[in-house]
Every structure is written in C-alpha cells, then in structure tokens.
Length: 331
Image 1: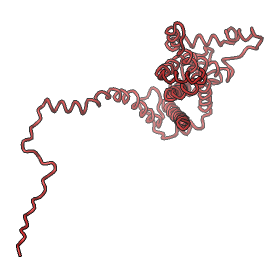
Image 2: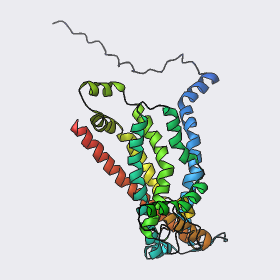
Image 3: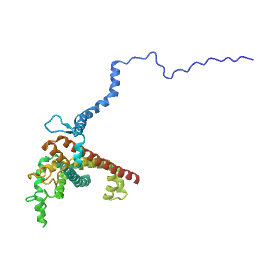
Image 4: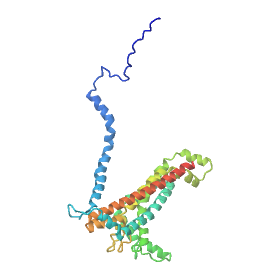
C-alpha cells in the first residue's frame, strides 16, 4: 500500500489585511474629508440655531412661566403648578374667545382658499397685462396693516360706513357691524380675506404654472372643456400646494390678533368689543399679560392655543391625506 501524504492546509488569508505600507493622510486630505462629511450640517445649522433661540427657547420658557404666578414686573414668581390651567378650563371668557377665534377662522380661511384657487385659475389664462394683475393681487398683502384696519373699521361703521350706505341704497336695514357678534366676525373675516387672498393666489398660481402643458393639451385633444380640465387635471395636481395653503391659513387664522385689535376705536372695544363679541384668544392673552400683568396665566393661554393649533393641524393633515389617497385610488 502506498502511503497517502496529506499536505498541511494553510489558514485562509484575511479578507481585509492591514496593508504594511499604508500612507498617512496629510492635513489637507483630512480637511477635505472633514469638509465633505460635515459641511452639509454647517450649511443647515443657521436655521436650527435661530429656531432654537427664537422659537424653541421661548416655547419652553413660556411653558415654564405658565407653572408660576408670574407678574409682569417681577423677576420670578410663586410656583403654583397646574393651577393656571385649571383656572383656564373654568374661565368663561377664554371659551368665549376660543369660539370667536374658530368662527372668524372658518369665515376667513375657507372662502380664502376657494377664492385664491379661482383667482389663480383666472390669472393663469392669457390675460392682457397679466403681470400687472399678478402684482395687483399682492398689493393688499404689502399694505400697512394698521391702515387696513382703520379703513375697514370705517367701511363697516354703523352710522357713516360705506357698507351700510350701500345696504340702505338697496332698501335694507343698517347692520351693527361692530356690536353684533356674527356681523363683527364677518367684517373681520372680510378684512383677513382681503389681505391674504392675493398671497395665497400667487402660491397656487406658481403651482399651476408648474403643471406640464402636455397634459392640458392632451385633454384638449380628447375634447375636455375648461371646467373638465380644471377639475380632472389641475385640482388633483394642486393637492400638495393646497395642503400647504390650508395648513398655513389654519395656523395664521387661529393666531389672529391685529385685525380684531384695530377693527374699532370705540371705548372699551380695543380688546374684542364692549361685550367681548369678537375677542380672540390672542387678544385675551395680550390683555391678561400686559393689562392685567399676569404673565403666568397669559402663558397658560398661549400653550392652550398652541394645543388647539396642533389639533386643527392634525385634522387638516388627516383630511388632506385621505383626499390624496382617494385621488390616487381613483387613478
């Protein structure tokens, strides 16, 4: 028998052997690698730094103050825990202000979005002097809000207001715009719509002009009229922009302050009317903090408003997501 000679098996070589002649990186190469790795974070850091200083810190500090009986001229206050929030839940004036805020928000934001879409569709056509019209719709947004408040306060004046004069011309009775609850909400909503509709119109118009013309031309070839093209092609493609407009209108509408503040110069009406008929949450917060000098309670109102805005934002998000998902299912 011949003997079988077995050769010893050498261990497998390492998959990632450390090279013996690895060169050391120079300082310039290290800086280049660090630049590629960390420069994106440096580019976006100014936003987060400014947000932390002007947004996050005031928000957290407001939550801290809301736990104290903190007066305006004191450096510190007495810790009272959640007492401000308990008082807020039983405060009839706060609930009245919240109802007024939601009412004005609905009367302003819903027509505002609808009118903005219709105006954008009109400006997207072949109008003569289209640039001038597009600039014109933005003029109310850049106008002085104080001047706008004074003008609309006079327009909706009870005795000598232009709106009541027009109503009398058609044989209708005068409306007490500044004392009636619903009428004052409508007047303030008209002021808000006049100022913000043009801004939202240009946002929607920019989204309309980004729609590929091939889709519109194909629909024209298929025989679709203007209304059919608008409903079946333009509106579905505007969903992301409409979501943005709706959410920003919700946030701004629930924080309304200047318009009701400047709506009337009658005695006792600068904080929402003689009977608080158009007092908003922000007006009540301003009154509690700077007139009653109770910053702790004003901070609790601010956080309550913050939670209300989050709730409305979540409702808008769920509704718009459902609409978008149903639109994709229809495709």
